[in-house]
Image (tube, rainbow, N blue to C red; front, side):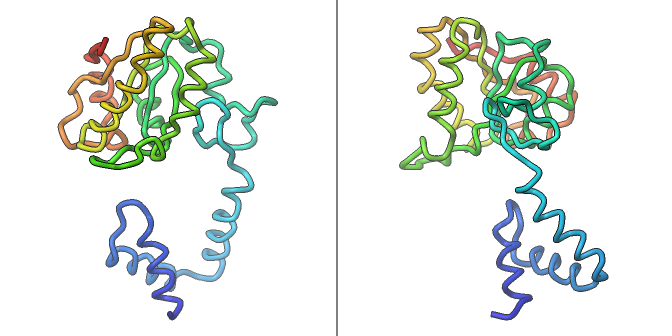
Length: 208
């Protein structure tokens, strides 16, 4: 396979990228000067070197903000509301909620969602890490907010989480909430504007 097709296949594995768009990326790169390509290559290589995952919420963050116990800035912030934990599918969803500025609790990044009829749902999300974190928080946790996208996969993930967390919720006496439908059906959280996210948070409803 020649370099153009090889790189096209790599880009096709990016989320939301089809074959035509992948090939456009390749031709765009071919039109760049060597310095620009060198800078791009350096930044890609720097990702693994300079970025790490938070030990609590599993979001990616810059090494320069790391604490001795490997926590991100949000998880280090003692001024946040420790009684609230929000579950999001991806880092980009966390960033969208933070940008809205209407939530002051902590987060947990699930690492994805659960497709309908998936035979091994626990492998699609960080199930064991989530249960471990909830156990660490214990009775300090008063509300767990399931903030999945308003589409079929997001709803399926939320249903799975409600079932998974029913026993911990009873044990530690916290309520489980879902975002209100300020989010239009079929939408992903990362594309929601700040006002929509605020409305979804304000209109969240308890599941237990």
